[in-house]
Length: 399
Picture 1 (spheres, rainbow, N blue to C red):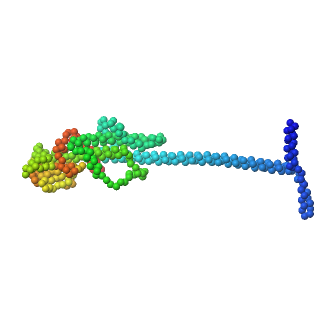
Picture 2 (cartoon, rainbow, N blue to C red):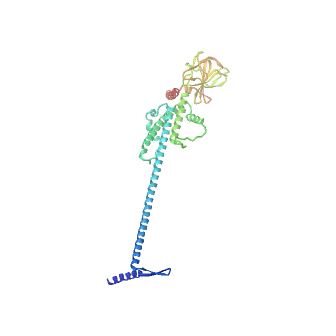
């Protein structure tokens, strides 16, 4: 205890030694004055100075601490602001994606509606596959995948629309494939090559390449699924219109056939000759009927044929009616199957009143018997195709 007191007394002595009484002589103009600075006053001044210094240090530390806290708060606020900006950017991007998706779906629906009306003449809901085809079409369901599965629940309405489009597209594809398959079988039974017909029809297309741009202004395509549907529709259209164009109706109401297609002895010289059609004998003036619907492209005379009417039925099929005694139509007229277009005669290189009937496919004469003697199942498919094509033509005329 004495050592501790001794130590304290030692420090007090050292501090007291710093503050001693001082006398300061000041001489001014010959006058001498004494200024006494006592040790007590010095201690008071030192104490005040120390208090001020401590106060300044405390304020400085407080300012530094406040600045440190403020910088942390500013960093936190900046981080929150950055997070908010990022969230707003994500929301904006999400809205853009939803808007773009909605535009895509609307364009897809417009395209489906157009195909449905163009090829069937009905609203999309009325297009259904025939019995038993929907189940088979399930594996071929079109995968449009317009909706990102990672989108928030708000996009579920768009997802439901997409699913409805996929189901309708699947039904449409099933109906188209079913019709195209039946038409293909019927066309093959008539002795025609379905693949060649589709290939030849596809070869007659062209034009400058202009990328498709949707409502969003971006170049894009509907994808492979829509390309498959477009291809199926094109195939169905070619085959069914070919069936409709096939001249299966009798060109004259007569019972006999005097000459067939192919090799024969020429009736004038007896030499071997190629006969490019069928000869139907009958009384002079017997009505000559269009064997299929089409447009009259020639009315006049041709060497060896006499008076001739030619009807273009589309799909490269043309019928020629020769040796006529008179005409009941004119170039440019649209005629229906069974409509009278001329009268039987014996003009040109002919031995008597008859009709020379030809069928030409892409300019080449083919045997008309394959068409005129078509089986009932082929005629049934043709009649179905005629109803569809006729309904489309009627709806377009009405509009």
